Image (cartoon, rainbow, N blue to C red; front, side):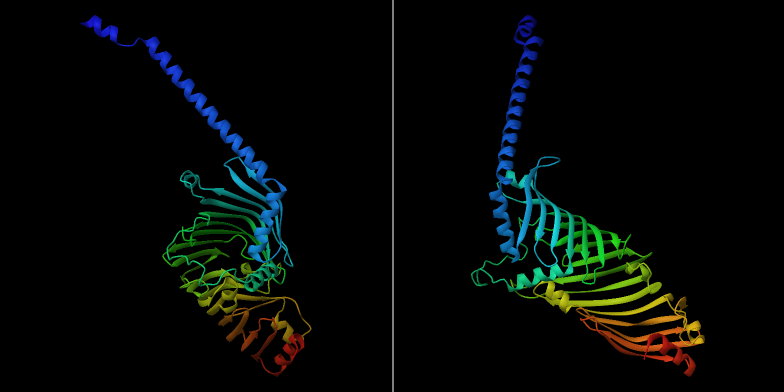
Length: 395
């Protein structure tokens, strides 16, 4: 019996031969798969990098924005993961919006199911002048819809959007204000399947807020805000009410608490006019059918005070003694407080109170959207002091 059992069992040599043949077949299959993938990537590169494909992409992008778009090159990256790469993007506004490099990676799990889903969008070297942004918004508003709202299928609430990337990475994005000030930042944005930002992390690299950071996290239609800048914090929450249907208005509202933020850190001026620790409570609200309309209609109201405030560039005490001839130095304020109300780009400062020793001032100032300044400041200084300040600031 033992001999029969031993004869029926395969010998080690037979087992090794079978294993070798299996490994050989697996190796051949793997090499064939790699060869097919390489051939597919090569064919895709030849197709994507052609002038015809680039010209078609330029036409599609230009039609979508209503502004001419130029693309220097389109290609396929293989490492570290296969992705579509676009270099030298320029939107021909005045001034132009530019993008050094765009990389778009698909979600391979979706491709295996036969669906195109976007996993990551990387934007590197983006420059966004405010004038160019405004021009794009105007072009989009003027652009006629190709179909009427009745014929356009509506997106159901909660429906997933496969062409929205799950993650967007902004590498060195620079915003340039209408006055020429620049803010450069890095950001990592993770979106829900419905296209809402779930988690946003921002690092401010240059310009105003340099060295600061911000974090937004979503719970339903509300976001918590946690910002660290100028040695202090800005914390709060905001809520978004989505539009009921396509073309309708959406709304936003919230409140923020600013604590111990250095005022000078909020600007990029090499020699700030004012420094001190800002304390403020702010509420804001707005609605619009687009981001541009929301910015134009956004309303905010803040009660603020500045601890250890210092006005740089003028010493009021010396200016009074010299009847306005002294224009340097600084003035330390015992009190600086008031209320700021904004509507779009217009700003109103009211209930202003400032005091420095025996000097005190109250008043209200309005800054129009055109940046025109108006208002009245009452200074309680006495006749001689008042005459000195008139020589400094004018009537």
